[in-house]
Amino acid sequence: MKYYFLLQYKRIYRSFKDFGTEPFIGYPIIIILFYWMSSSIFENILYANYIYALISIFFTYAIGNSEHRRFVKQHFSIANYRKIIVINNMLKVTPFAMFLLYKTYYIEVFLVYGLAFLVSLTKKRTKVSLMVPTPFGKKPFEFVIGFRKTLWLFLLIYCLTIIAVYKGNFNLGVFSLVSVFFVCSSYFMKPDSDFYIWIHAMNSREFLRHKIGIALRNSFVLALPILIGLSIFYFDQLHITLFFLFAGFSYMLMYLLMKYSFQNQGMEIFQGIIGILCLLFPPILIIAIPYFYNKTIKNLDLLLK
Amino acid sequence: MIYIKKLYKSYGNNKILNDINLAFNPGEIHGVVGENGAGKTTLFRAISGMENFRGTVTYTEGKVKDFIGFLPTDPYFLSKITGKEYLQLLCNARNIEINNFKEKNIFDLPLDQYAETYSTGMKKKLALTGILLQKNDVFILDEPFNGVDIYSNAIINQLLVKLKELNKIVILSSHIFSTLYETCDYLHHLKNGCILKSVDKSQFEIIEKEMQASGIGLKIDKLDLE
Image 1 (cartoon, each protein chain N blue to C red):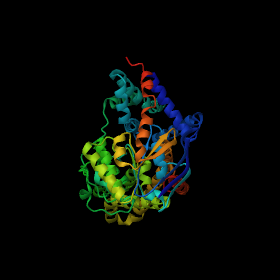
Image 2: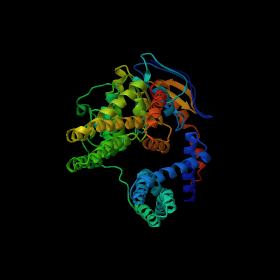
Image 3: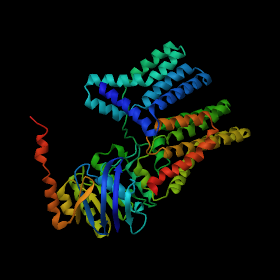
Image 4: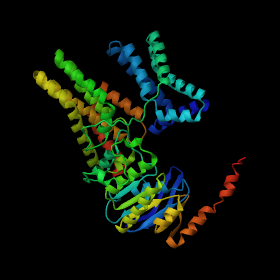
């Protein structure tokens, strides 16, 4: 068991090396960024202590890999398997717990560890065979997969739009519009297998144009019910709606470019950090989009030249 | 025709492929054999353009990657994609329009189910169907018979005959010599990243014997099995 955790440490160490950063530089950067993001949450959000605790649990659940868990179960005794899963989850929430401790939210610290323990007892479902129909079947890829995984979120978002219209709350309507692009951007968080890029009889620029076209068109389709609702019931604020539509497109474009910039480099964590930075400082997009476009073209050339 | 000239591939100091020189003509089926780790998959990925390498791979008809159908040993499927959507995706990638996938479903796969739920053999058959529908001119099949049932193996054998008739270039690997005897015109023995020997059908037996005589008994003895 000791060797298992030593290997986990080595894997983290190697991911810094793969990124081209010495770990002794990378660790402090990660800690500073984590502190800064956590502080931002507490400064800007109401009931941040509860939301922060929930984020930590969501994080633990989201990065839990069922294949990895199956591997551990297969090769360790049941007692050690349980210990490993619990310790893994405890370690994942520890940075969050430390920050809550620093903020003197002692009860929430217990809550976070308690929930992490409960998450250890749950099983992450992997293969579901119920086929969910989608409107994107003619161009199957990110949007087919993503739509099936996040269908429940869309039902929630459209309900929010109805409430926004019914209660006369334009801000809530804008929030639902932004949420559509937030969810669609999440479809570009994982790198593709080389094979699914290589199969295209296109060069890098054509491939990227093809991908951007699909992303903009499909996200527009998903945002359309909200756009129609807001345009009819809040016509005088149409310029604000269009501004957020444009912002949504820009963010999604940014995440799409980032996905292919980091393709084959195994740096999802760093991709996430840059993504959050862009969310917190939107002007970064002006530099980031052209930068990642060029980086993407170079990276895709390795497979599509 | 595909020419491979002075192909080298290494990861750091680890040499994977060393001075590979081969030529593949239309209407020929070439088998590549070798132990696990000999470099077969890397060679296939290099020919396909999925790996960087030193040397040249020339295809006389154009940009080789746009004409190759590549069947990996263990095809990877995206989650929440049905069999039909997978085929659609592969056809879209090559601008091929097919309206009735059910008609093309020669392996009777459950195309409306998620591909990730398929068994190993079904996944291989789906991947193979995909590259056949792409109407490729070159086929690289990395262990196409592995994990596939006997009936489907017979279909694959017939498919290879058909591809040969259609003047396609087929390059495949297999660890089962009987399948190579049945299908291949030429065999290339890859060892430690080098082509040790290339032979035609009349000399397949030489390679088979060479591979079998590589001290298997002595290796097993090292385990000290009791």
